[in-house]
Length: 515
Figure 1: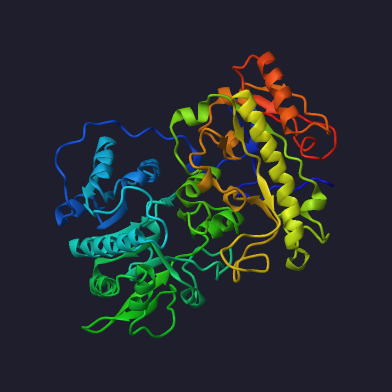
Figure 2: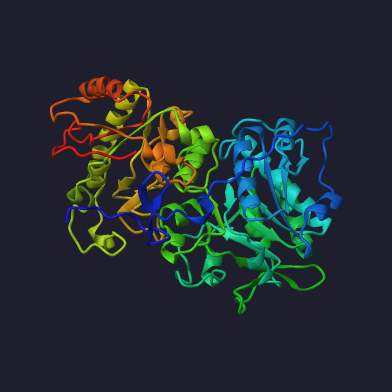
């Protein structure tokens, strides 16, 4: 009683990590991975050719391809490290600019140059650069289809966490398989097959599309539609062209006959399960793969609110991102126990389910949601003040939200989604504007940082404790006390601060966090 439960997690097991900390069992993809090699970049600028595609394709003609600009090289490097860990060597990375190409070559990544002429910085959703990027993408998909390979083309922020080839091999008649923005698993959480016929009603998401070479005619018409309507969104045109001449229901594999080929026949298409080929919402908010106790094949950082920096932070929260060793090892860190009154999380009573959520009619009001979030933000504010005063980096607590976030009005969750409230592991970009914060690495770490296997045991095992501020003390007094005591703690060891609820106006006896 009075304890707020944790969010659903892929495993019920608690494990003791090196350094003596007990954590929920980390997912398989969180294991530490070797760094990419440093090699001398050559002078050549290889282009995509049939020979290159066939060289890197699997024995049964399958290939993974993505594309990246200089600003997103770290996404490509992380993606490649996951592929290497999965022992999946059949991939190529397209370089949208020469700087990206040289960067990829310098880390031994098999690459080809696209020379797009686009910005080397962030594109920005919906901008002119974003629209032009779509034209380069559809050209790439067409070039890949013309090589004769059956290719999985993905956005660089759609991370592969399980080898998808065995899944595709079970569907030899599928010519087009696409991820989706559908927010409900149409077959529930015990079925890992394709979505049912109702899954075709939502927007397809072309950040993750598997297209066999036999669907070349469809890809050609998609490319023509994009270049005839350059202001249109390539994703919308993908769906409209794919549906040309479509008709009939799904078969036993849930494949649907869609695009009608000129010589007769139709392209058989399927919608990949949104639980296991996940969006940023179905994985991080509805937590479908966790509820299935399964590892997703892919997680795409859509449905988030912090630009590229928000994507990075989401992926760090989910233990999917690969940072340099120094990110995990220092300099020094500060953490605190979050004061999270149960009455703020469940203000309207109701029967709390085994997953910590409530019936929808017991959800928080907007005012109650903000009371809960503001209570936590005051503590984060004070934590940042303490961290700044002591020269440390704040490790965020897990945040809890009474309501979901979306770009349009809603009644607590995105219309049509499977999210359940409250959100007990609320993504930080729902609450903090990490995009406007800029480079957050000198300021803070994600809430899962200490339970991440990449974090050294020396960090978890090196702890100093600090008594909390008096209830009447404000952030400045807390920071001053922290600064005085951190010097006495030796300065070399990470500091664990007591709950900052007292400094934020809360009450209760101070406790001590661990780091």
